[in-house]
Length: 286
Image (cartoon, rainbow, N blue to C red; front, side, top):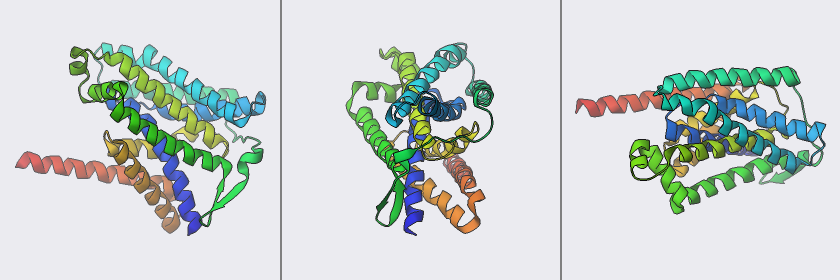
């Protein structure tokens, strides 16, 4: 049981970082940016390339993944998604465009690295540490530390900085924020850059914990997507959503088998959306 809880804690950390990154894209634009899932794989393969091909130390390999995804995410925002918004495209059109970008990036990874699973020669990062009866590798402890740091940093920025207040204003109403003097497009670009950097961070860290494949992005992204949708605009709610989803995923794995772990997040999302719709219908009937 201790190891199950340890595994759930690592899953919680991964979901929290991915969910925070996706929320920074989703909240100001109201669009599901599927290419964020591809950035997770880009980060993983960037870390793999810098570690295995160029021989960078693990920390620099992960930092390279973070910077690469930050730059790629900002480029996609400026070159693709921002022009669509300026032309008045609906969130559905943006979703379809991002799905196309996701497919392009995934196939580009397959073309460069092949479809076979690849692994990093991890060395010290697979050394095991026992805490409270659970066993963690050094890479998993890095993921846990990154999740805690991400949650704390986003909370402080959102509540105590001018940038955080501007971001919350854009999330509430981008047009009204622009009238009030907030440069909404710059705020959105900053959120996209940071959210993409977080995708690169978790992708790079996961590469040192498991093997990488071109399709791994969507597998990691699903839980973060659900957490971001459930959490609305609060870091505290995001933490609770990530904790709930990690418990649901491992409970499903424990009771039904490993193949049901990823399905748990989608079941939670469907139940959550049905509950919200039922609540809106009830209020509308009053």
